[in-house]
Image 1 (tube, rainbow, N blue to C red):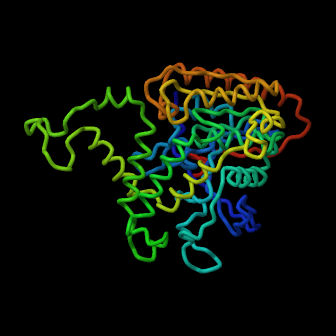
Image 2: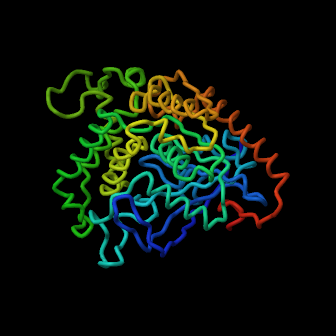
Image 3: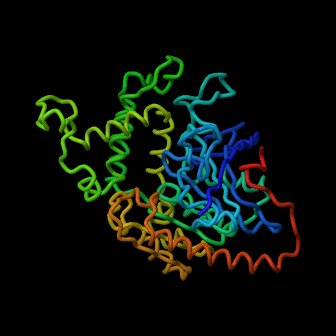
Length: 401
């Protein structure tokens, strides 16, 4: 499979206010996005990829002159890959409130002339979808061939099917859920409390103090990372291996690092604290907690999905205890109750929640096969298109040199 090559992010500014679910409004904001492939004449081959907690618009490809800048789902998206950019025009959008280019807490609030900080409004999955729909409008995309996402991205794909049922033909939900369990909400709150209690947080306005609440971010990431791995995966990778085997391999009898797993988690926490924004972490985990489309329907998910029109593909992983297969099966059952077309794959994989980012051949083959069906439908529908619109090229390689 070929690499998609170098890619270039793009931005789109929106002056009109976006009314949020909280009742607040966000005006004068910017979305950062990337595109891969070519939009066809009738604009029917567009696929939106929604990102998870610590990811971004940078789904595939690399940035020129930046080593180790490969997109977070590069194994999934590209020429000849399961989501084939020789066939589809793929869009990745950075969500509002993020720290990777779209307007977020680190950006200047035009009303105050200072960074938003803690004053950035709380956003929801539905708010993100509304912003993505505005971007699609600007790109002239009336209907997506598919909207796809894993984890939190899968929540966004599901929300698309509910909020804009006529604007997507297929909904692809990987390792996700229609609502978080109490345990998941608890993990998120522990992570938030680690940040909020860090003295360097300064009520969210730490930018003005020239500091970063690194200790809080480290702990938050360590807590989160534990939930992404399975017990079997951790046992195989680390077990009870001691860190300093060369130094005798015995306990140190202090509160430093004894075990390999401790070293690994601290490394992940340190790395995360260098590039992720604390306010963004708070916002995104709250968006996770709040997502519950059945809430307005007396807790009945089937009723929440009654207005959907898309065909659905869902995949889960047996060792994913964060978003377990039971959660995906609940969505499948609700869709079946509404007589929707749904394909479901439950993959026996050892890697826990992170499996959706990895290259399990069975998983990749199923996604590839599903998108082949999407492509056949798209190509057939395209032959009957009455009008043609100018194509949009990918923001990558020589086309933007």
